[in-house]
Length: 259
Length: 259
Image 1: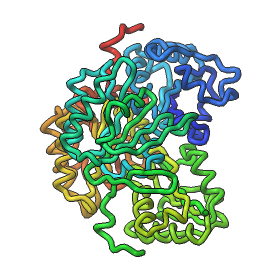
Image 2: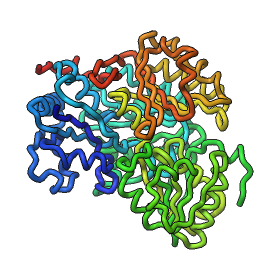
Image 3: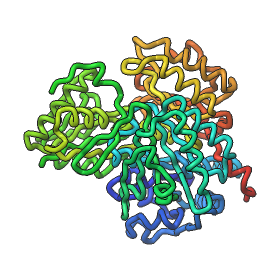
Image 4: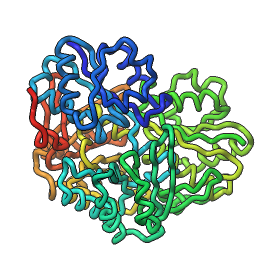
């Protein structure tokens, strides 16, 4: 029985790719993935493989082709960026494999990766140290009312908030609207982290205050950006390498300081 | 200037340790960490290193010792399980380094890792495919009212819910109480994933229904467990390897099926 393995590249740097994911690629006959992600890989990893590539909006066809290749007896790897289980390809692979009655014919597994929110957090300081929620602002597959309700309740519950897909050329009003909801429950000086191309070429890491997220700033946010909005305890940290953000977990109140 | 690098081991398997984290350990003079986590590492990685080890409740001392070692000019790695930014050591390291005025003397950085919720999700199927929230039920550093409010609002917002630190010998009433709040917003057949020791020895992967989370089942949940409660669309998937859970993202409604 051939294997269909859905792997996560992590942020994209080879040094953050798990050996288990690399090994799955090395032993596969077929590699399927969105071109932009395959371009992040060292060319040697793809040498001699059958490649199933397709554009951003053609996930269904890509996953279907990967399932078909596996059913034809070829070990196949389906490549996702970040973690395949967080807004990645794991769900569609399970869903389509079940729908097409392929689960008995193939060996499906998921290899986890470092999700974009953890990569961004590491670059920003330590913003996710307390309870957090992750919301995608893309209303392509989810009604906007559902997204809006989640943003509002997450802000109300004082979750740190990771915002995926904050803005694209065609989706430009969703982020200002989400920020408006968040401002009902957060002070103007709440730190907001913005990471674009984390651990990739042209990396941007920026920590600003919520009241700095105005029209001019928002122009700089796009589909390659991830935002992290602090909770009510998140604060700025001045470090030589630049401003960072930190969400305390409560240790300092609980324990005696030593320095 | 010596480096203090906070790394995440991921779930613990060497095949899921990022090369960047491994490299930081290889080039460090000092490795600091909780004994149980250091035991997950290949012994070669610790050979010849100065080791700063301390028990579970002594994070402050451990981080302080790591900062002191770095200030003394020794490159130091502070080891966290999972991702150091998700309920890990990144926050305390930033916090203490700032508090002790060490940020100008050391080069502090965080190397992200695969967090426990992504490792668990990969083993459970694809439960995190839509917006999710992560809550720790440990009320050691957070008032229970805050935790309870987060659980309730996350359930109300239809987030998939990852539950860290669900239960320990001394904290046995919090999980039943959290489940009671969740049941107000989820049907009895909502899938719940339970992973214990994911990608480690004695791995347990179990998918049950919310109404199966009764007293007898809860006895099996402990500090090594992570729970993932589905949203209102999460469903079971029957796979040859065992029951899995899947949170659809909406593709099937949006696109035409191909098989």
